[in-house]
Length: 283
Length: 329
Image (cartoon, rainbow over all chains, first blue to last red; front, side, top):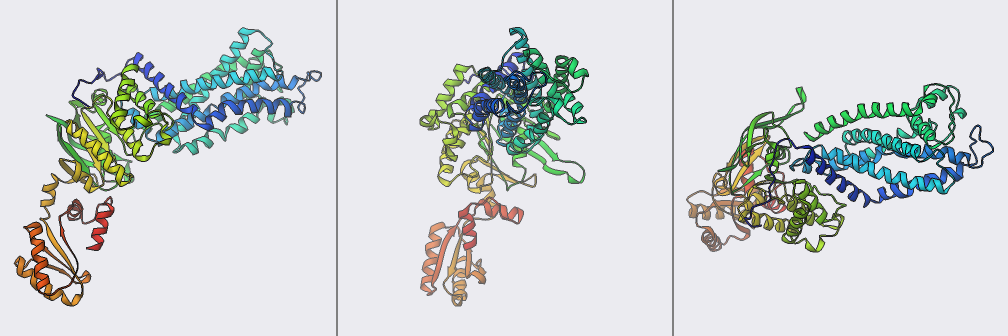
């Protein structure tokens, strides 16, 4: 190193929007690039979605009848696909929580905080990267779905609406993951804490079964399950068969209810995650 | 001008009965172009002090000015002028060496092109060019630390903070890293270095600040600190306990009665002002008196001796060599 003048930044104490954006993109690049080199993530992104589609389409496909469509041999495949899509979007919790917990444990967050960068970029870069990955996973699943007999039946615009809604769901769930990742001590704990509660949530919903098959007292629970709202709304927008056990608000307005859930989940978890980040980072 | 000025820094963690005062009023002045070694055992408050000086942690009381900017009021200005290399190699192990440095360069607000150029320069400088495009998973511990250090030098920082840069490294890698740090020093960098290795502070720092339980218990140059506990001395271990009396007489004669005797380990210690000449004289005298000796050494005071004198205990990070020496003596 010589005494040549270094290209130092002019350093305001509050960073502007353009710097916050460019830093977020830099961190996004890092998260995607680094994440794709982890075998776990490759399996999560490329193997697991294909496996789920094939398993549900061919293993359960003949075993679970969809009410009102007893004559259609592809009925269950048409029915279940939206459920698998929504479940996979909910699993966005995992990469967000593991990624942040890992960065804390390895001291990378401290490193970032000692640099003249926008502090918000650590979180926003995580969310943008994971959302991008979720979009790729969703695209893979849609192609697989089309191959096994699932169809988009209500036109391109409503299909895009459904895709948008699924990504909004992933966005909301990323904040839940961020809060978990920032709260637990290690990526190992984050991995299990991020997913374990999601299994009952996904199975006690309309994702894989018509809720009419559940015991009577469980039917309203499943119909009001937030995940069910997204699944039903997606089925609605894709023109796929939809079945409700109870004829309440969830059955009447699935899209509206999903949008309300996006606002509620994000509204609660995003501020909590940001607060936790500020607190964790100043320890 | 001073690169670092800190006055009365205090940081307490927790509250009520559980409150732990990690740093209890630290004053620090580091003139530009000098290296200060913050020396202390684990939990002494070294890292907390560094975290306050690098804007990662807000002090409960006191103030600090680093590279001309107040850490509390102008943190972003401070961050753009410092480099920090932490206790753990804080790098992304799934990225290559080049990608890591590019990433840090971008976050120091260099353009993509500048960041690439700087990454290539640093990889060359730190002898990592051959491994530049391998992911860090394939790097050794020493290589990771070098890359971590390179990451803190992206913008030619005015002040460099190295928090235990060699902890956990094997001796060879540690010496390599010392060389890298010495090069920075030769270029006039101001460095604050924390370490639990006494010989590390001795080897690298102009001034040493000894910290324990969150307060500074001594400071000065290595020589000044050593002078506090006296100069060189000769240690003799005689072959059999029966010859201790005779040997003591001989040594008292030569030193004017300053010989200290330890029957338990058959050891006699005597101060000397004549270095190796004194050592040769003692050997001659003992030989003449027909005292058989197991071991004889000219011992210079180490910083561990200083630490024992100041705190009544050994620094936990005392190196293997020093510890063995303590046991043997």
